[in-house]
Amino acid sequence: MKKQAILWEKLEDNKVKCNVCAWRCVRAPGKRGFCRTRMNIEGEMYTLIYGSMISPGSLDPIEKKPLYNFWPGAIAYSIASIGCNFTCKHCQNWNISQCTPTENGKSGYFDIQELEGKGMGLYETTPEKLIKKVIDSGAETIAYTYNEPLIWHEFIIDVAKLAHENDILNILVTNGYSTPEASAELVKYMDAANVDIKAFTDKFYKELCGVPFLQPVLDTCVRWKKAGMHIETTNLIIPNQNDNLEEIRALVKWVKDNLGPETPLHFSAYYPTFKMSEKRTSYEILDKAYNIAKEVGLYYVYVGNMRHPEGENSYCPNCDSLVLGRSGYSFTKINLKDGNKCGNCGEKLPGLVGQYNPKSKSRRFSFF
Ligand code: SF4
Ligand code: SF4
Image (cartoon, rainbow, N blue to C red; front, side, top):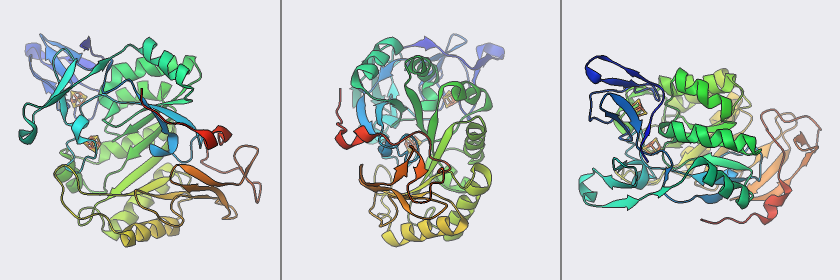
């Protein structure tokens, strides 16, 4: 639904400047920002998707976000809206991220030629109604995910405040294209994030994601980490686009030097979708990336969207024992004591936040 936005400035000639993401769009009356979900209406900025969701939500394993080092085994109540401030050619959720809300936020339509005339209805809720559903579901966390949550700023902040009042943790799954102003509000309520570092060059961001720079993403990671959020990062490797091993090494070194060796990095396999027809990522390149990250000194390196013998597991950085064995979204081995100490050497595991949830053995997932 339409609601007056926050984090914007009035400019001359009834123009407005939005400071919710690093685009910092300046728009004349009647025009929308790059994300298509915010609009200048008679000199004031509005969000069109406050409380507008693609469904009432769904229950996911927290590992699906992916978050492997934050409350392992927890359930994430996942919610999403439509729109994105990126236009990734490889977007796996393009049917929601590239959907544009109508001015009343009740439905979405596509500007894309192939899908002209198609659209989707949206489910409307309030933070209070949503939190009640989350509490009733038994989920320990809420994940703002699937499309880009940063552009849903007003709604996710209101929901996250209520979540904390009810001892529910907040998780962002995001491209990280934030600003210092938006981040200052987010870090008060968000507990963890998985940030996509899509590549380590501006060229990739320009050509594949439609945004000019990588740097705001890196700045966001550092800002959130310093503020105390638990950060994990994901790098989706696309053949011939960001699979250069020296580029991968540079990305890994940046993570280690700026976020710390305890910051998990998930390498993920791409498959052809939306506007990309490159073949799938090979096992060999994912394995090479995994080994580079281990060699550089990251403690927790994971491989997603493809089976890898070590890439689903967590190992103790002190004695190298397997502490959390995984297969898909199930645990094959739990070797922890006192919640988050290594069962073998007894060291507290750096970068493992929260405790393994024993109820995860009987986790049930569903849509509402
Ligand atoms: S959220 Fe970002 S893309 Fe959307 S209007 Fe604001 S600055 Fe522009
Ligand atoms: S940032 Fe994520 S949701 Fe947005 S277009 Fe890119 S892949 Fe899709």
